[in-house]
Amino acid sequence: MEQDQHSDEEIRNILSMKNVAVVGMSKNSEKAAHYVPKYLMNNGYNITPINPTAEEILNKKCYPDISAVDEQIDIVDVFRPSEDVLPVVQEAIKKQPKVIWLQEGIHNKEAEDLARKAGITVVFNRCMLAEHQRLS
Image (cartoon, rainbow, N blue to C red; front, top):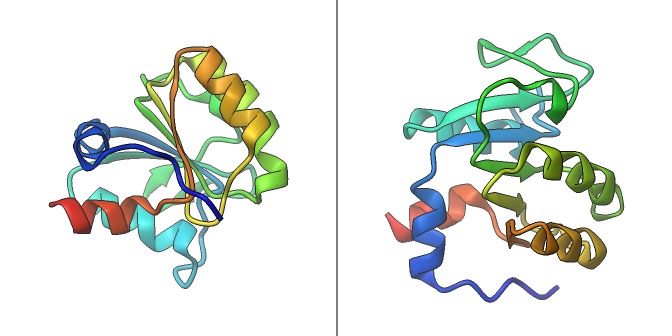
């Protein structure tokens, strides 16, 4: 699978943003959708879990969807299958985040183009944890 064309400097700039909404965050500590945001939290990020099936994850209030979040969102970090990304991005655009980050293995050209047209930077097929460790 291809990957976005961002330079390390651009990724570093993105990683300097601290308010991250995690769509598809998991209660299961074995899953990347749990341990990646946990790692980010432990490294100074303000994580907002988005999961309609949970009340709370990692002692953080869980929201059913992005539009329910009141706080400013810098990055929407997506842990959903590629085919489920379009409605997530359509909803995220309304919150005007600076970045939509599609985790490793996730790529949806239609959703990515839509986000870019709305002036949002798109990162795809990369893991925030791996990039943070690689560039720190």
